[in-house]
Image 1 (spheres, rainbow, N blue to C red):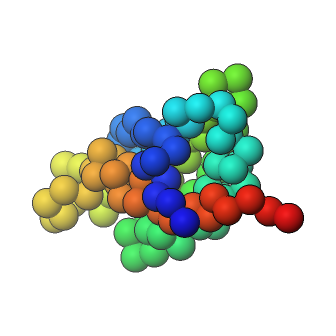
Image 2 (image 1 turned 90 degrees about the vertical axis):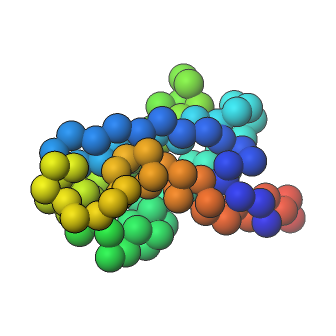
Length: 106
């Protein structure tokens, strides 16, 4: 097991009540592993209780990246939320803590 942060870095942003997180592989060789294990369902489960809407994953193979758009993720929006730091950057850091099974499959 390894943490996603060992394989990728992230960029994040937010607009209204939508958080947008990109996960970019350090090495394109690890992109298939990200495709397999960093799914919309896992991201939604990781943020259960935080993300109230859909989590949509977009694949960007040319740059070995995934982009997640999460609706209902910011407690009504940055300016309306009572959360101290539940904005996109905090969510991207939490996503990088995801466990990845990097053991070779036989």
